[in-house]
Picture 1 (tube, rainbow, N blue to C red):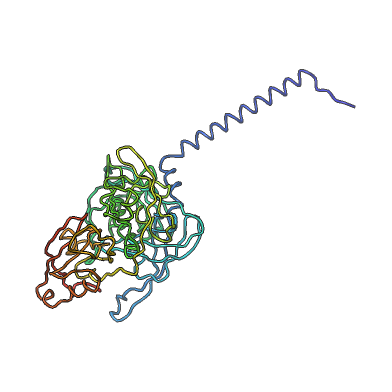
Picture 2: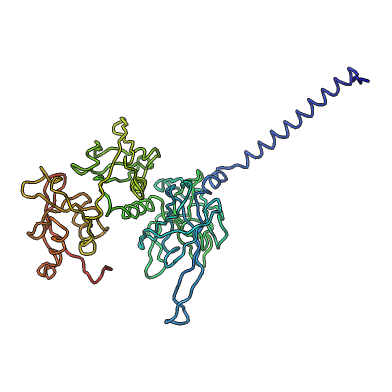
Length: 448
């Protein structure tokens, strides 16, 4: 037997179905609208950066205040930010100083350990490395050159061990100098009233776009709403130097880069190119802007130096460079120079050098067939004071030719120079000769 729905009842049911769907649709639209209203820029900022913030823990040995002859172990905690997808992390040095086993919890709650690769005690920054199977999300880097007082900021970190704690505040002041103890003075800090607690150190201070504009570093003990962060422009400059040190003794590409700010936005430009270097061979020129490195956008010198850390593909590093609106792609290969590198003069005058092969010296100077190329210059060293740059070729010191690192060591240890404390030097820069006079740093004030 078949049942039939009367026509009037069928129409009623149809209208009821349409009415129900309309009501449900309106409710869903209202829920979606409310959700979108709640999804503020700060909510998006925290959501987008979460996986690029890591939590740090470890035990460190400190002096026992009750006994000068004893030490004790304490639990340390802090935060770090991912600056390279291969597992390179930037944090404060005081977070990991003296920690033998640096425990890391990533944004997706994976646990691993990190190695301390390089650090700068003066600015209290350090670079760590964790081993990863998959690329990590990298923190979005903003700029600290256009910050405004009362601008909204967010701090994310491992506050008192509570992972990924989020606090919100404003920028209270800029350019602060803060001395936390006899050894540590921070300069040019951002002051904020965003709550920063023990464990926040090394974590990001974000703007409303989720871009890191500072590294949280300190809080004023006993005060309310007074905390400080290292401006991201300063932090990126230090990070570039730290990462460069990881490979300075091992490779040579012949290019020097620097970060400039155009309309408060960072740009990575080529500051100089050594003649007959790998960079010169592929047509990189002074003034070129490096737009991309291995298909990723680049705006800081840190991006350039990190591309050469670890295993570099035999085809080299792919760069997209721009000059006067014209872009071109090049592959920059490096020369391995680790066996010839010497840091014999690092403490005395503040340089690291590598041997220059005779074939590289052809056409540079009629009197010199060999020399030592400067690969790194220590900040505030005698060499930096005298204007020595990475890429310069030292060909003579105090009347002696410097063809090998042994020559350099002999000159610096020569009795007359040690007694006088200074010497004449002769360098080649872009095939042009320069000379000057340099003092030797006090050896007893340096750690060898």
